[in-house]
Length: 229
Image 1 (cartoon, rainbow, N blue to C red):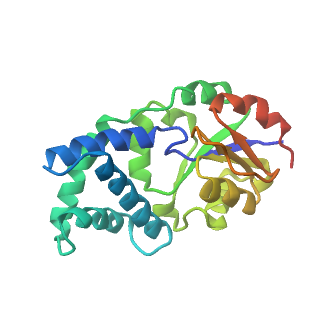
Image 2: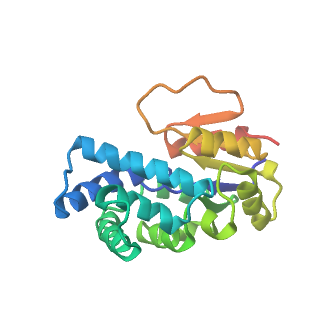
């Protein structure tokens, strides 16, 4: 049976979407830029586009931030100016950090005998600070983040690195994340049990039997005993 769970953070444990919306609204307004629905949609599109370039290895973590800024300030914006602009956004972002209400109770319930760790497409310092701020860091043995390990989801090497750190074979580990392709399908392809946390109100697409969909983390204690190697 499953002996450990690897967790995604953003939009799985941490309400990234709401924090980003609140922060972008305040930041764009403070910078004297449009901050209506269209502007927020543009911000989210830029984030997805350039973060995907980061996970594909085309940009570093810092470069993807700068590219998002240059869409607003111009393509020749110096690095220092772009970094300062993004740092001002981060100030608003960190003020909006919060965990989903089902995160801590579920982790507390599953503490024994299961082990818990993080696999995230981000940087370790950022995710360490985030988990500490939202009160969840103590639940996890370690954080494996793509910037430091050199592999990003959906690459199987990212999942295998985390499993090796746990000293467990992939079939003894479950992975839970909010993205169907990058998290769920990728975890299955790497040999882990794949759990998709789908908090969206839209009906899901048809799913293969190896993708286990839940809509709240409180469903995990019931689901986990049904997963077998």
